[in-house]
Length: 150
Image (cartoon, rainbow, N blue to C red; front, side, top):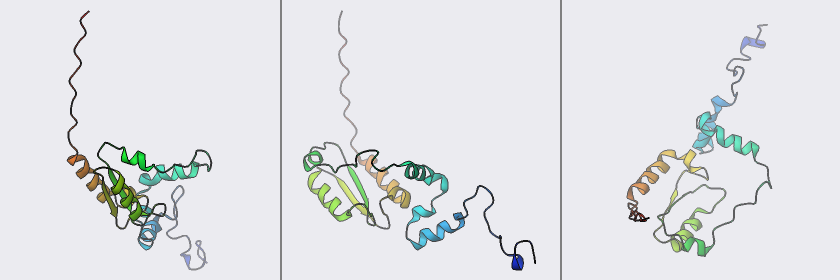
């Protein structure tokens, strides 16, 4: 019998020390689940994974939704991007609500994205952010205050 077990194939393809044995499967699983974030490079999702591991339920109060009054009082340009596959939000209702309440909002539902759309569709998110920032009006500079005579 060969050292790797019957037929000698056992251990072939195994990850070496310090490597994630599931790493070669990530792209296939990402495609299977239609979630490109699963196949993102490790260094890209490492901070997110650390945050998830260190999160302690009840350590902070849950985020509360904005009230209609708060949304209606926004006086700045707003871009809202929501992933159609978000498990946390109802994308159509989010877009309908912000469109009705936030003056001049640009809201869009991104296909093939869930709640982590910046990881799942980074090119689409960056394209929309750059277009949004590029279309924003230049801030009006207020004149400098007159020096006070002493």
